[in-house]
Amino acid sequence: MYTRNVSEVPSKLIKGGKPVFGTFTGPLSRLDIRGVEAPFGGIPFPHFMSNFRIKSTLSLNFVLGDYIGTIDFFDFKVFGYAEVILWSKEKKLKLAYRVFMGPRRRFIPHNTKSGFCISFNKNRYIRISWDYEKDRVSILLNLKGDGVRPSVRGAFRAAYSAPCTQEVCSVIPAPTKRRCSATYTANLFLHGSISLGEMKNSPKSPGIDTNGYGLLSINRTYYNLRTILEVVSACGKIGDNEFSFQIFSPVENAVDTDTYNANQIVVDGALTPLPPVTITYPLGITKQWVIQDFENMVDLTFTPNMSHFRDMAFFVVRAQTYTIFGKFEGVIKTKDGKDIVLHEFEGFAKHQMMRL
Image 1 (cartoon, rainbow, N blue to C red):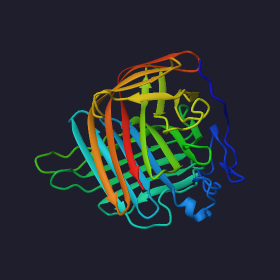
Image 2 (image 1 turned 90 degrees about the vertical axis):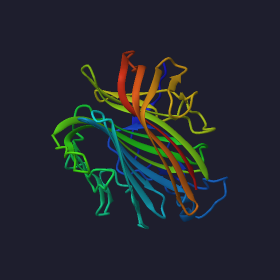
Image 3 (image 1 turned 60 degrees about the vertical axis):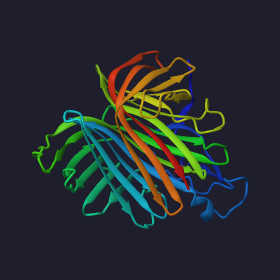
Image 4 (image 1 turned 135 degrees about the horizontal axis):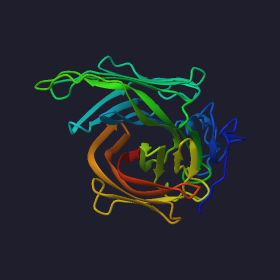
């Protein structure tokens, strides 16, 4: 069976101008990959120039009561972008809200012990904050509606000390060992509510406190001028097991993916590193996805229920993103040989092309 070395989080992710590659568990102080020497073609550009090619994202995928959704922040240095997508399972209703954020020193902080991501727009107030000492992750949404969409209010929280929580940091080549991609993830047990305001011909939906699950992910990467990213993930409970998984398609031409990748499953707080996985969709992105490996640990299909496409352009930056909600079928095996069987299990898929 596939194995991958897992060690304690290093004090720094970049040492002596070189990335510290690996998979690490435990609290991480800073997700910071600045200072890599000559990351592009071996040319020794000043650090401020190569650092400018680092782009950051923060995502929270969650399942809470009747809702499954994503909250995404994108940090493109010169501007920021945030988006909330909700899918009401009962009403079969898709809601999407986005906001651009003007130039700011930093949209997504390096500090993973205490910090926040926030959109201050009065019509699109979105905040994700975290404080390790106070044992708290907090999410607030106040999204103003219009003639097509209702207003949305949401407030939910999580505690790092919950038994199911596991914090993982993966630093992998992107695609060569001159550059790197660093991803921090934490699977969360959530409690809170989401409520819909009134819109034309639609009654108000009251918020009721309920429990749910979330997967918080922060990534920083030295991006190529053109990059394609794909990821599938899910979080929730099957029987007595609380679990989450996150699986990425291999970075194009990435080196040594058997040793360095960010694929993982966490079951009741126990981490199982997963091998490289192939993600295909032979009939198209909005049709069934096939997710398989060569180690017989991952054998899944993902059937979309709802997809949301966003084509965003800002000066020389362009990002095309499919965010897809759907259901997983199949089996993932843990490092102990236990089969986690998924049957119509709700989850997420994302396909993104970025041109810088």
